[in-house]
Length: 328
Ligand code: FA5
Image 1 (cartoon, rainbow, N blue to C red):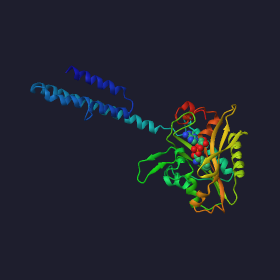
Image 2: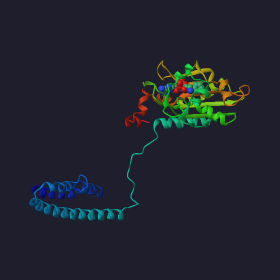
Image 3: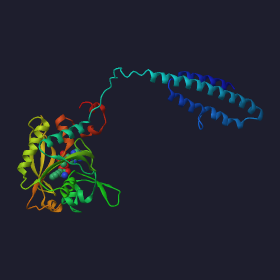
Image 4: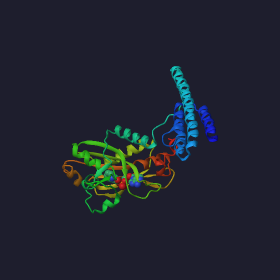
């Protein structure tokens, strides 16, 4: 019985403290809730008592519940009236609260910048799927099954039938686009790619590339060199030192790799693979390699951002750490 009296005091104190309808609702649950409400639980104890005790405690409990419900209802009406009052006095002409505005993530900013520069060079932006078939990611790019080059793109396979994968590069979009369009054209394809590999300061499992493709009657590597130098100069707002070295990709011949010298150091960072589109790829999409040719490149978006903004570790981009995000 003594517990019941202190319970009433406890509820009154709780109600006194409540200032919102939402908080009041959770109080209702706490005391009267069907499953775990404190009063509900007390009622469940009744059958354990003797007949006489039951009559006495039961009566008190019932009365207590009635009283508490009334207290709760009164508080409800009070809070509701206050709320209506607040709404009625809402002043639309008051100046807004100063809130901190968000901004685009650094990777979105860089993505936008890249598209803008290439737009200025007459490249259209094209997007492609992140989930790909083996055909587009590998076969159509002159990478047949069992070709050792497939190891270069450690692949995340999906448990689908037929077999699908998360694209390991943006190059499959070359094939999608060429199958649907006739040259001449110049496109840029920014997008997310995935690789099943160990992460470190310059490697992520999930990162972004921007693919470039320019096809025409006599588009050549000298054109590529010009376009890409223009791009870097605009992107970094200054002359950056780049070097082109021979490389290998099954879908380009010849193939090259582009490195950029990290500002103030002797170190180079690989930012891009490129080359002249392989005749096999041109044939695969239904072009005549004797009539059209062109260059393709695939750059790492995070790597460029790291150089431009002096970011020492690629993992910062995906850390969600506001101290990092707010700097850009
Ligand atoms: C490719 O992915 C080719 N598809 C590029 C290409 C396109 C070549 C068109 C020829 C013609 P590569 O695996 O080297 O190539 O990756 C291209 C760029 O992506 C690299 O230069 C690098 O900047 C970036 N990159 C590669 N792996 C990672 C990674 N794990 N994390 C962050 N960036 C990466």
